[in-house]
Amino acid sequence: MSWLSPVELSGAHCALKSLAKDHLPGLAEAAREGDLWKIWYTNVPAPDAMGAEIERRLELQAKGSMLPFTSFDAAGRIVGMTTYMNVDAVNKRVEIGSTWTAMRMQRSPFNTECKLLLLGHAFEQLGCIAVEFRTHFFNHQSRRAIERLGAKLDGVLRNHGRAANGTLRDTVVYSIIESEWPTVKTHLRWQLDKPRLA
Image 1 (cartoon, rainbow, N blue to C red):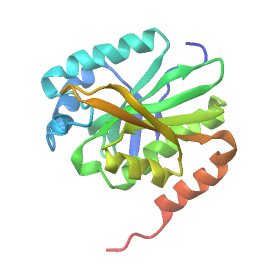
Image 2 (cartoon, rainbow, N blue to C red; image 1 turned 45 degrees about the vertical axis):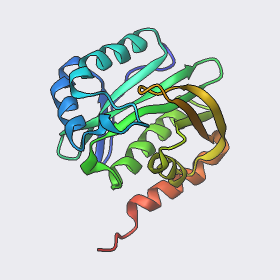
Image 3 (cartoon, helix red, strand yellow; image 1 turned 60 degrees about the vertical axis):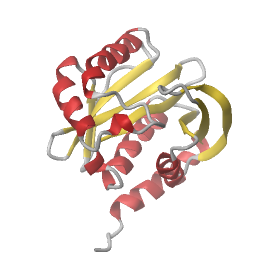
Image 4 (cartoon, rainbow, N blue to C red; image 1 turned 90 degrees about the vertical axis):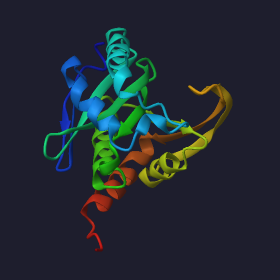
């Protein structure tokens, strides 16, 4: 994994650290908040399946196809997971995905800053030509969040796979390309810095 190596990224609202087995209790607790694994169109691991999900992501990291992170809030509490995945080292492309966040951190500056850090590392340190995002067609909250980042819609992969409940999944694909990054970066920083109305 010479191109995509473990790294820690941090800002004022979040920190992203390499996923580790001892993060299991904190990740299980974060998933319990809001019963996130019960939302049918997402893939949040249930608390009792979290250990297996950590193992899966670490195995993919060992194969060079994923770089998983545990996300922490400003107080140092574990609040979720995210990854660089579908790694294409030859063409220098990654997907930011398999992301979930505890309910209390959703719709806050936390997600904006996490994406700013991940995108910044991808474009400025890894030299990516594009960064991709994918989500379930019915995950409207995720789609709006991706669009707020400045990602553009590439298309919809129809019948792309099966959800855990057996239903067919249409996957919505977005991306940010290298030439768009300076403008997207400016916008994300503006979102973080602008005064928030009470």
